[in-house]
Length: 419
Image (tube, rainbow, N blue to C red):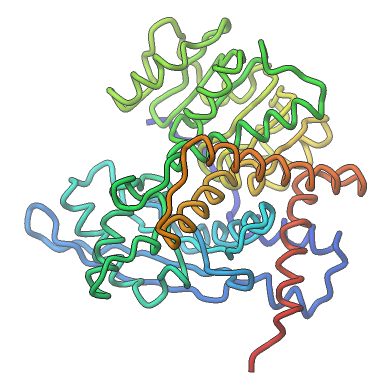
Protein backbone atom coordinates (compact mmCIF):
# COMPACT_ATOMS: atom_id res chain seq x y z
CA UNK A 1 0.00 0.00 0.00
CA UNK A 2 1.22 3.48 -0.84
CA UNK A 3 1.64 5.88 2.06
CA UNK A 4 2.14 9.60 2.20
CA UNK A 5 3.58 11.45 5.16
CA UNK A 6 1.02 13.82 6.62
CA UNK A 7 2.85 16.55 8.54
CA UNK A 8 1.30 18.52 11.32
CA UNK A 9 -1.85 18.14 13.33
CA UNK A 10 -5.25 18.60 11.67
CA UNK A 11 -6.73 20.35 14.69
CA UNK A 12 -3.84 22.83 14.81
CA UNK A 13 -4.54 23.55 11.13
CA UNK A 14 -8.25 24.10 11.88
CA UNK A 15 -7.42 26.54 14.70
CA UNK A 16 -4.86 28.38 12.56
CA UNK A 17 -7.39 28.80 9.76
CA UNK A 18 -9.98 30.01 12.28
CA UNK A 19 -7.61 32.64 13.68
CA UNK A 20 -6.75 33.95 10.20
CA UNK A 21 -10.43 34.40 9.31
CA UNK A 22 -11.36 35.78 12.75
CA UNK A 23 -8.58 38.37 12.41
CA UNK A 24 -9.88 39.37 8.98
CA UNK A 25 -13.41 39.69 10.42
CA UNK A 26 -12.15 41.71 13.38
CA UNK A 27 -13.90 39.26 15.69
CA UNK A 28 -13.74 40.27 19.35
CA UNK A 29 -12.12 37.97 21.91
CA UNK A 30 -15.38 37.09 23.70
CA UNK A 31 -16.97 35.79 20.52
CA UNK A 32 -13.85 33.83 19.61
CA UNK A 33 -13.93 32.12 23.01
CA UNK A 34 -17.53 31.05 22.40
CA UNK A 35 -17.22 29.62 18.90
CA UNK A 36 -13.63 28.45 18.45
CA UNK A 37 -13.67 25.28 20.55
CA UNK A 38 -15.94 22.19 20.64
CA UNK A 39 -19.04 22.26 22.84
CA UNK A 40 -18.83 18.53 23.66
CA UNK A 41 -16.16 15.87 23.28
CA UNK A 42 -16.96 12.23 24.00
CA UNK A 43 -14.35 9.45 24.06
CA UNK A 44 -15.65 5.90 24.41
CA UNK A 45 -14.27 2.37 24.57
CA UNK A 46 -15.98 -0.02 22.19
CA UNK A 47 -15.55 -3.71 23.11
CA UNK A 48 -16.37 -6.06 20.24
CA UNK A 49 -16.51 -9.85 20.10
CA UNK A 50 -14.48 -10.79 17.04
CA UNK A 51 -15.25 -13.74 14.79
CA UNK A 52 -12.69 -15.95 16.55
CA UNK A 53 -14.44 -15.37 19.89
CA UNK A 54 -11.98 -13.01 21.58
CA UNK A 55 -12.89 -9.47 22.72
CA UNK A 56 -11.13 -6.52 21.12
CA UNK A 57 -11.42 -2.96 22.39
CA UNK A 58 -11.57 -0.02 19.98
CA UNK A 59 -11.13 3.65 20.87
CA UNK A 60 -13.86 5.88 19.45
CA UNK A 61 -15.07 9.47 19.53
CA UNK A 62 -17.99 11.82 18.88
CA UNK A 63 -17.41 15.56 18.89
CA UNK A 64 -20.02 18.33 18.70
CA UNK A 65 -18.23 21.51 17.78
CA UNK A 66 -21.25 23.80 17.58
CA UNK A 67 -25.03 23.67 17.83
CA UNK A 68 -25.54 27.44 17.61
CA UNK A 69 -27.32 27.26 14.23
CA UNK A 70 -28.99 23.86 14.61
CA UNK A 71 -28.29 20.19 15.35
CA UNK A 72 -24.69 18.99 15.04
CA UNK A 73 -24.06 17.31 11.69
CA UNK A 74 -21.12 15.24 10.56
CA UNK A 75 -19.87 11.91 9.37
CA UNK A 76 -18.44 8.90 11.14
CA UNK A 77 -15.20 7.45 9.84
CA UNK A 78 -13.63 4.05 10.45
CA UNK A 79 -9.89 4.31 9.89
CA UNK A 80 -6.69 3.13 11.62
CA UNK A 81 -5.38 6.72 11.81
CA UNK A 82 -8.44 8.23 13.54
CA UNK A 83 -7.43 10.40 16.51
CA UNK A 84 -9.35 12.73 18.78
CA UNK A 85 -7.58 15.77 17.32
CA UNK A 86 -8.54 14.70 13.80
CA UNK A 87 -12.19 14.31 14.82
CA UNK A 88 -12.14 17.72 16.56
CA UNK A 89 -10.71 19.30 13.41
CA UNK A 90 -13.32 17.68 11.18
CA UNK A 91 -16.14 18.76 13.51
CA UNK A 92 -14.79 22.32 13.44
CA UNK A 93 -14.68 22.38 9.65
CA UNK A 94 -18.22 21.00 9.54
CA UNK A 95 -19.48 23.98 11.54
CA UNK A 96 -18.08 26.48 9.05
CA UNK A 97 -19.08 24.28 6.08
CA UNK A 98 -22.75 24.15 7.09
CA UNK A 99 -22.74 27.90 7.61
CA UNK A 100 -21.06 28.58 4.24
CA UNK A 101 -23.88 26.81 2.38
CA UNK A 102 -26.34 28.36 4.87
CA UNK A 103 -28.08 25.20 6.09
CA UNK A 104 -29.39 25.09 9.70
CA UNK A 105 -26.82 22.76 11.19
CA UNK A 106 -23.76 22.98 13.38
CA UNK A 107 -20.67 20.82 13.11
CA UNK A 108 -20.10 17.33 14.48
CA UNK A 109 -17.89 14.36 13.67
CA UNK A 110 -17.24 10.84 14.85
CA UNK A 111 -14.64 8.17 14.37
CA UNK A 112 -13.52 4.72 15.42
CA UNK A 113 -9.83 3.84 15.36
CA UNK A 114 -9.92 0.54 13.48
CA UNK A 115 -8.92 -1.07 10.19
CA UNK A 116 -12.18 -2.00 8.44
CA UNK A 117 -10.28 -3.60 5.56
CA UNK A 118 -9.28 -6.39 7.96
CA UNK A 119 -12.68 -6.85 9.61
CA UNK A 120 -15.57 -9.07 8.55
CA UNK A 121 -19.07 -7.76 7.90
CA UNK A 122 -20.22 -9.26 11.19
CA UNK A 123 -17.39 -7.62 13.13
CA UNK A 124 -18.15 -4.26 11.52
CA UNK A 125 -21.84 -4.57 12.39
CA UNK A 126 -21.17 -5.47 16.03
CA UNK A 127 -18.65 -2.63 16.35
CA UNK A 128 -21.03 -0.12 14.74
CA UNK A 129 -23.94 -1.09 16.99
CA UNK A 130 -21.81 -0.99 20.15
CA UNK A 131 -20.36 2.38 19.13
CA UNK A 132 -23.90 3.68 18.50
CA UNK A 133 -25.03 2.59 21.95
CA UNK A 134 -21.99 4.33 23.45
CA UNK A 135 -22.74 7.69 21.78
CA UNK A 136 -26.52 7.34 22.13
CA UNK A 137 -26.88 10.20 24.67
CA UNK A 138 -25.48 12.67 22.13
CA UNK A 139 -27.24 11.73 18.89
CA UNK A 140 -30.79 12.25 17.65
CA UNK A 141 -32.64 13.95 14.80
CA UNK A 142 -32.85 17.22 16.75
CA UNK A 143 -29.44 16.89 18.46
CA UNK A 144 -26.72 15.35 16.33
CA UNK A 145 -27.16 13.58 13.00
CA UNK A 146 -24.32 11.26 11.82
CA UNK A 147 -23.60 10.40 8.18
CA UNK A 148 -21.12 8.26 6.21
CA UNK A 149 -17.47 9.25 5.92
CA UNK A 150 -14.22 7.38 5.25
CA UNK A 151 -14.85 3.61 5.12
CA UNK A 152 -18.46 3.92 6.26
CA UNK A 153 -21.47 3.71 3.97
CA UNK A 154 -25.25 3.40 3.76
CA UNK A 155 -25.17 -0.01 5.45
CA UNK A 156 -23.29 1.51 8.40
CA UNK A 157 -25.98 4.17 8.67
CA UNK A 158 -28.70 1.51 8.55
CA UNK A 159 -27.13 -0.26 11.54
CA UNK A 160 -26.91 3.04 13.45
CA UNK A 161 -30.53 3.92 12.64
CA UNK A 162 -31.75 0.48 13.67
CA UNK A 163 -29.78 0.47 16.93
CA UNK A 164 -31.03 3.95 17.85
CA UNK A 165 -34.63 3.11 16.84
CA UNK A 166 -34.68 -0.18 18.78
CA UNK A 167 -33.47 1.66 21.87
CA UNK A 168 -36.18 4.32 21.53
CA UNK A 169 -38.90 1.79 20.68
CA UNK A 170 -39.97 3.13 17.28
CA UNK A 171 -38.40 3.82 13.89
CA UNK A 172 -36.56 7.14 13.66
CA UNK A 173 -35.08 7.50 10.15
CA UNK A 174 -33.94 11.11 10.73
CA UNK A 175 -31.24 10.13 13.24
CA UNK A 176 -28.77 9.60 10.37
CA UNK A 177 -28.43 10.58 6.73
CA UNK A 178 -26.80 8.67 3.92
CA UNK A 179 -29.16 5.74 4.55
CA UNK A 180 -30.31 3.20 1.94
CA UNK A 181 -33.25 4.47 -0.13
CA UNK A 182 -35.49 1.79 1.36
CA UNK A 183 -34.96 3.15 4.88
CA UNK A 184 -35.65 6.80 4.14
CA UNK A 185 -32.50 7.68 2.27
CA UNK A 186 -32.51 10.37 -0.39
CA UNK A 187 -32.01 10.04 -4.11
CA UNK A 188 -28.79 11.81 -5.09
CA UNK A 189 -27.13 11.42 -1.69
CA UNK A 190 -24.46 8.94 -2.80
CA UNK A 191 -23.09 11.24 -5.50
CA UNK A 192 -23.76 14.51 -3.64
CA UNK A 193 -20.20 15.34 -2.56
CA UNK A 194 -18.73 14.67 -6.00
CA UNK A 195 -21.56 16.57 -7.70
CA UNK A 196 -20.97 19.56 -5.40
CA UNK A 197 -17.25 19.45 -6.26
CA UNK A 198 -18.20 19.51 -9.95
CA UNK A 199 -20.60 22.45 -9.42
CA UNK A 200 -17.90 24.55 -7.75
CA UNK A 201 -15.32 23.63 -10.40
CA UNK A 202 -17.81 24.79 -13.05
CA UNK A 203 -18.17 28.10 -11.20
CA UNK A 204 -14.38 28.50 -10.86
CA UNK A 205 -13.89 27.84 -14.57
CA UNK A 206 -16.52 30.46 -15.38
CA UNK A 207 -14.76 32.96 -13.11
CA UNK A 208 -11.36 32.22 -14.66
CA UNK A 209 -12.75 32.16 -18.23
CA UNK A 210 -11.67 28.52 -18.62
CA UNK A 211 -13.53 25.83 -20.50
CA UNK A 212 -14.03 22.38 -19.04
CA UNK A 213 -13.98 20.70 -22.45
CA UNK A 214 -10.45 19.42 -22.95
CA UNK A 215 -9.25 20.54 -19.50
CA UNK A 216 -6.64 18.22 -17.98
CA UNK A 217 -7.71 16.85 -14.58
CA UNK A 218 -5.78 14.95 -11.88
CA UNK A 219 -7.68 13.26 -9.03
CA UNK A 220 -5.87 12.20 -5.85
CA UNK A 221 -8.12 9.72 -4.05
CA UNK A 222 -10.58 7.63 -6.07
CA UNK A 223 -13.21 6.94 -3.44
CA UNK A 224 -16.79 8.17 -3.53
CA UNK A 225 -16.14 11.90 -3.96
CA UNK A 226 -13.11 11.57 -6.22
CA UNK A 227 -14.61 8.99 -8.57
CA UNK A 228 -17.93 10.79 -8.98
CA UNK A 229 -16.25 14.16 -9.55
CA UNK A 230 -14.01 12.45 -12.13
CA UNK A 231 -17.04 10.93 -13.88
CA UNK A 232 -18.90 14.25 -14.06
CA UNK A 233 -15.79 16.08 -15.31
CA UNK A 234 -15.26 13.32 -17.89
CA UNK A 235 -18.89 13.66 -18.99
CA UNK A 236 -18.36 17.41 -19.40
CA UNK A 237 -15.50 16.78 -21.83
CA UNK A 238 -12.53 17.14 -19.48
CA UNK A 239 -9.57 14.73 -19.78
CA UNK A 240 -8.88 12.92 -16.50
CA UNK A 241 -5.20 12.10 -17.04
CA UNK A 242 -4.32 10.60 -13.64
CA UNK A 243 -5.97 9.19 -10.54
CA UNK A 244 -4.75 7.50 -7.37
CA UNK A 245 -6.05 5.42 -4.51
CA UNK A 246 -4.36 3.65 -1.59
CA UNK A 247 -2.98 0.98 -3.97
CA UNK A 248 -1.29 3.15 -6.54
CA UNK A 249 -1.48 5.88 -9.18
CA UNK A 250 -2.36 5.46 -12.87
CA UNK A 251 -1.65 7.93 -15.69
CA UNK A 252 -2.55 8.37 -19.35
CA UNK A 253 -1.59 11.66 -20.97
CA UNK A 254 -4.48 11.33 -23.44
CA UNK A 255 -7.06 10.73 -20.72
CA UNK A 256 -8.24 7.70 -18.78
CA UNK A 257 -11.45 5.86 -19.55
CA UNK A 258 -13.19 6.96 -16.34
CA UNK A 259 -16.32 4.77 -16.58
CA UNK A 260 -14.14 1.67 -17.12
CA UNK A 261 -11.84 2.73 -14.26
CA UNK A 262 -14.83 3.10 -11.91
CA UNK A 263 -16.06 -0.33 -13.02
CA UNK A 264 -12.66 -1.89 -12.32
CA UNK A 265 -12.45 -0.19 -8.92
CA UNK A 266 -15.90 -1.58 -8.00
CA UNK A 267 -14.91 -5.11 -9.07
CA UNK A 268 -11.30 -5.29 -7.86
CA UNK A 269 -11.15 -2.62 -5.13
CA UNK A 270 -8.20 -0.78 -6.67
CA UNK A 271 -7.05 1.25 -9.68
CA UNK A 272 -3.54 -0.21 -9.83
CA UNK A 273 -2.91 -2.05 -13.11
CA UNK A 274 -5.67 -0.34 -15.08
CA UNK A 275 -5.29 -1.13 -18.83
CA UNK A 276 -4.03 1.63 -21.14
CA UNK A 277 -2.33 3.44 -18.27
CA UNK A 278 1.11 3.60 -16.75
CA UNK A 279 1.95 3.60 -13.04
CA UNK A 280 3.41 6.72 -11.47
CA UNK A 281 4.43 7.61 -7.93
CA UNK A 282 2.27 9.70 -5.57
CA UNK A 283 4.64 12.68 -5.66
CA UNK A 284 4.66 12.52 -9.46
CA UNK A 285 0.86 12.65 -9.57
CA UNK A 286 0.75 15.88 -7.56
CA UNK A 287 3.40 17.42 -9.82
CA UNK A 288 1.65 16.68 -13.14
CA UNK A 289 0.90 19.71 -15.29
CA UNK A 290 -2.88 20.04 -15.31
CA UNK A 291 -5.72 22.53 -15.29
CA UNK A 292 -7.58 21.07 -12.30
CA UNK A 293 -6.18 19.09 -9.36
CA UNK A 294 -8.76 17.41 -7.12
CA UNK A 295 -7.28 16.25 -3.79
CA UNK A 296 -9.95 13.81 -2.60
CA UNK A 297 -8.01 11.65 -0.13
CA UNK A 298 -7.16 12.58 3.48
CA UNK A 299 -5.92 15.62 5.40
CA UNK A 300 -2.56 17.33 4.86
CA UNK A 301 -1.74 15.64 1.55
CA UNK A 302 -0.39 18.88 0.08
CA UNK A 303 2.11 20.46 2.44
CA UNK A 304 5.16 22.72 2.52
CA UNK A 305 7.42 20.02 1.09
CA UNK A 306 5.39 19.26 -2.04
CA UNK A 307 3.18 22.30 -2.72
CA UNK A 308 5.91 23.93 -4.78
CA UNK A 309 5.70 21.08 -7.27
CA UNK A 310 1.95 21.54 -7.92
CA UNK A 311 1.32 22.72 -11.48
CA UNK A 312 -2.45 23.10 -11.52
CA UNK A 313 -4.45 26.23 -12.25
CA UNK A 314 -7.33 25.17 -9.95
CA UNK A 315 -7.07 23.07 -6.78
CA UNK A 316 -10.52 21.80 -5.78
CA UNK A 317 -10.51 20.36 -2.26
CA UNK A 318 -12.86 17.38 -2.40
CA UNK A 319 -11.28 16.05 0.81
CA UNK A 320 -11.35 17.75 4.21
CA UNK A 321 -8.18 19.70 4.99
CA UNK A 322 -5.97 18.30 2.21
CA UNK A 323 -3.84 21.47 2.01
CA UNK A 324 -1.90 22.76 5.02
CA UNK A 325 -1.66 26.50 5.82
CA UNK A 326 1.99 26.53 4.73
CA UNK A 327 1.00 24.93 1.43
CA UNK A 328 -1.83 27.47 1.07
CA UNK A 329 0.71 30.27 1.09
CA UNK A 330 2.86 28.53 -1.52
CA UNK A 331 -0.07 27.86 -3.83
CA UNK A 332 -1.28 31.46 -3.40
CA UNK A 333 2.16 32.76 -4.39
CA UNK A 334 2.04 30.58 -7.53
CA UNK A 335 -1.32 32.02 -8.56
CA UNK A 336 -3.26 28.79 -8.03
CA UNK A 337 -7.01 29.30 -7.61
CA UNK A 338 -8.12 27.31 -4.56
CA UNK A 339 -11.68 26.10 -3.97
CA UNK A 340 -11.52 25.49 -0.20
CA UNK A 341 -12.89 22.31 1.33
CA UNK A 342 -15.68 23.90 3.35
CA UNK A 343 -17.11 25.17 0.07
CA UNK A 344 -15.96 22.59 -2.47
CA UNK A 345 -17.09 19.41 -0.71
CA UNK A 346 -20.21 20.81 0.97
CA UNK A 347 -22.48 18.98 -1.47
CA UNK A 348 -22.57 15.96 0.81
CA UNK A 349 -23.88 17.79 3.85
CA UNK A 350 -26.27 19.81 1.68
CA UNK A 351 -27.99 16.69 0.35
CA UNK A 352 -27.81 15.20 3.85
CA UNK A 353 -29.88 18.20 4.90
CA UNK A 354 -32.30 17.50 2.04
CA UNK A 355 -32.57 13.88 3.24
CA UNK A 356 -33.25 14.97 6.82
CA UNK A 357 -35.94 17.40 5.63
CA UNK A 358 -37.57 14.64 3.57
CA UNK A 359 -37.48 12.23 6.54
CA UNK A 360 -39.02 14.81 8.85
CA UNK A 361 -41.74 15.63 6.32
CA UNK A 362 -42.30 12.00 5.20
CA UNK A 363 -42.28 13.35 1.66
CA UNK A 364 -39.57 12.51 -0.86
CA UNK A 365 -38.27 14.40 -3.89
CA UNK A 366 -37.26 13.39 -7.41
CA UNK A 367 -33.55 13.04 -8.22
CA UNK A 368 -33.50 15.93 -10.70
CA UNK A 369 -35.14 18.20 -8.13
CA UNK A 370 -32.33 17.34 -5.71
CA UNK A 371 -29.64 17.98 -8.34
CA UNK A 372 -31.18 21.35 -9.18
CA UNK A 373 -31.48 22.37 -5.53
CA UNK A 374 -27.90 21.28 -4.85
CA UNK A 375 -26.54 23.22 -7.82
CA UNK A 376 -28.34 26.38 -6.66
CA UNK A 377 -26.96 26.04 -3.12
CA UNK A 378 -23.38 25.34 -4.27
CA UNK A 379 -23.22 28.08 -6.87
CA UNK A 380 -24.82 30.64 -4.53
CA UNK A 381 -22.26 29.81 -1.84
CA UNK A 382 -19.44 30.04 -4.41
CA UNK A 383 -20.58 33.51 -5.49
CA UNK A 384 -20.77 34.68 -1.87
CA UNK A 385 -17.26 33.43 -1.09
CA UNK A 386 -15.89 34.81 -4.36
CA UNK A 387 -17.34 38.25 -3.57
CA UNK A 388 -15.42 38.37 -0.26
CA UNK A 389 -12.30 37.09 -2.05
CA UNK A 390 -12.50 39.90 -4.62
CA UNK A 391 -13.81 42.73 -2.43
CA UNK A 392 -11.31 42.12 0.37
CA UNK A 393 -8.46 40.82 -1.81
CA UNK A 394 -8.10 37.79 0.46
CA UNK A 395 -7.36 34.13 -0.28
CA UNK A 396 -10.39 31.98 -1.04
CA UNK A 397 -9.91 29.90 2.12
CA UNK A 398 -9.97 32.95 4.36
CA UNK A 399 -12.98 34.27 2.43
CA UNK A 400 -14.90 31.01 2.93
CA UNK A 401 -14.01 30.85 6.60
CA UNK A 402 -15.06 34.46 7.05
CA UNK A 403 -18.46 33.71 5.56
CA UNK A 404 -18.99 30.61 7.72
CA UNK A 405 -17.52 31.97 10.95
CA UNK A 406 -19.38 35.25 10.53
CA UNK A 407 -22.71 33.44 10.31
CA UNK A 408 -21.98 31.35 13.41
CA UNK A 409 -20.84 34.46 15.31
CA UNK A 410 -24.08 36.20 14.35
CA UNK A 411 -26.12 33.28 15.68
CA UNK A 412 -24.22 33.27 18.97
CA UNK A 413 -24.68 37.02 19.39
CA UNK A 414 -28.41 36.79 18.77
CA UNK A 415 -28.88 33.81 21.12
CA UNK A 416 -26.73 35.11 23.98
CA UNK A 417 -25.65 32.94 26.92
CA UNK A 418 -27.95 30.79 29.05
CA UNK A 419 -28.32 30.97 32.01
